[in-house]
Image 1 (cartoon, rainbow, N blue to C red):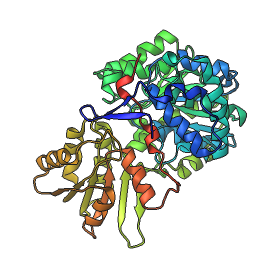
Image 2 (image 1 turned 30 degrees about the vertical axis):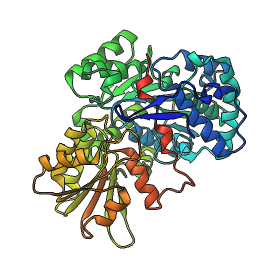
Image 3 (image 1 turned 135 degrees about the horizontal axis):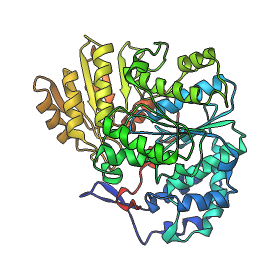
Length: 456
């Protein structure tokens, strides 16, 4: 049984203070992949923490693998993963041995750490977990590294072992105090800035922008697609203080961007323009040809983001992890432009700590049929609450509650175009259900962390 209890009033994981997991770092070594995953599960006891002290110490114990690597560091609210996937694809086409570090994962923990888009092997996970289990003995329980801190340094160690030429490095939460900020990159990129994780990053766009801009390093070039004037002012101020050359990817560049992009949606053109700006900043250090850029963008794959699936019976489904207001607006715009005038069914599951009322208000008008479902997480919003919000936003729709994604798919109108959205957890569940991702056991719960124990 996992060392967690559930607080129904808060819908958050809370650590059990008398749990045997307090001695995790001194437990028996993992001998199999399930053992290693179980060890990582136990690290969730230590919640999440904003700060770099533990990560720097753990990296030092591991021999500072970050000093043997080159990075592009990517932060922002939405589009980080897509931008990282585009950069990785471009540089892989250029012949580099690329590392890719992203979060969260859709199904398997191994998605987080990839080399040339090959997931880290189960054997390497076991080996690295055993190595870091020994290193964690140098920490007290009061100052124990969190799951994300451990995984961050594990990834650094693996990429160094693999002699990666370049690592595309996505932030976890924020930037300034995020564990990924222990690296000094060749270049930084900041996607859009929107309201998300306000309880930890700040309740205004300016505060969130300041946290994201924390990845900017002295003299290191930075590119951004952030457009809101107050947000740009924050990023510009930090760049000036750090004497970091700033490139603003404006709307004109986005409009002129070619259509040869495998990822759907107008917002992906903006992400592609950001990736291209970073490539241009690094042309002297890492030359990339126009053909390699075009091939990289044409072949990039990033599941769960406006991903179109066709079932054997001919039914078409669109999967998109629109988990915040900005993501919902991007999804609505893409559906209105690319998938009209089909009749649609919306299958919606959202976390309760997101702005689910506004997300429902944005997405409900898209569909004639709306089916609300729980997300397979303790953080799920109540589907009954989602139903009320959707009915208010679209009184003419047929709205009902389902107990699971499988039930919703069975209940959906056969000839409708189906949109599944609201949470990346739900997207991962869909990919498993449809057989597009193979996994002996879902590891989505590893994305959970003790939000109530987050510290600065």
